[in-house]
Length: 229
Image (cartoon, rainbow, N blue to C red; front, top):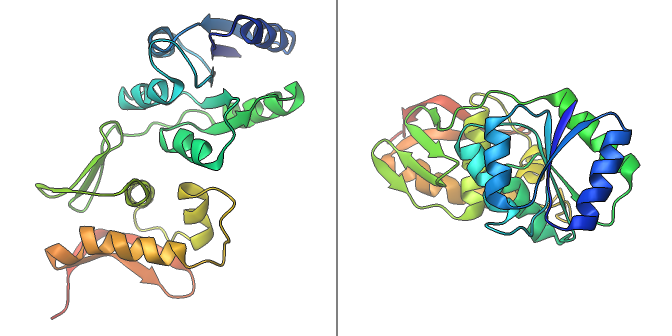
């Protein structure tokens, strides 16, 4: 297995290299954001371990640029920042997992094994379903030729629905994607934000595409229908 570690702090970088090599990984190192993007896009890796505080540009921007270029290598963000908002920000930028410092190597290795088993699925740079279009790299979305002006949460919800058209997504699944785990699963926050999203992607265009599946969750139809009346 081959890993790329993007970390500018010399002692942490050396510790990670030694621990990963003892576990049997081949390890390449990058010390700043631009080098991390270049290595990850030019060479084949099974996983990227990415610090947030980097010279050049930060780890969030590294992740955005990788995903924007169509590079879907599994990314684990490893950082001293452990606030819920920071975890959500990292995941929204396209990271696959998040581990706070200080960390145990046992947990790090377990998370890396899980990411590598999952692999790097082929994902389109632009998501499109039934007239709705979303570009994760530029964080822009459209209905037909009309640009949609979405909040960060609305954008995250629409991206999730576009990745799974015609599939029923439970409220728990939606919470796990767009909110941190401090939220109460019984809260109506999902219902509120789905309603906000409908007001922007369906109602102004007199269409029904984002629908409620009673007792189950929500589904984005592959094809919209005209709104009755």
